[in-house]
Length: 70
Image (cartoon, rainbow, N blue to C red):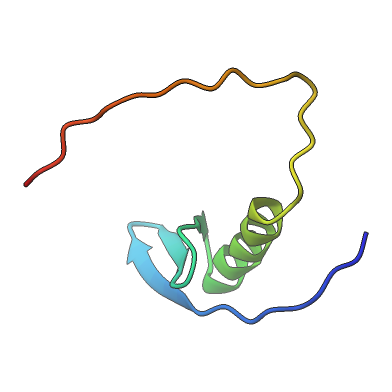
């Protein structure tokens, strides 16, 4: 599988004993007990987010509506 590198920015916030890392360019977040662990987990989450889907079953697609604030 061919890959390429891309740099992302992350914001780090502390929530209790956890550090939350959130990607600023893509809606992906993760957490860890340290900043290093949170960033490592975010990197893994981003790699999984961009991984090609490999469905084992054909998905069923449905439409839905949701009430949103005006």
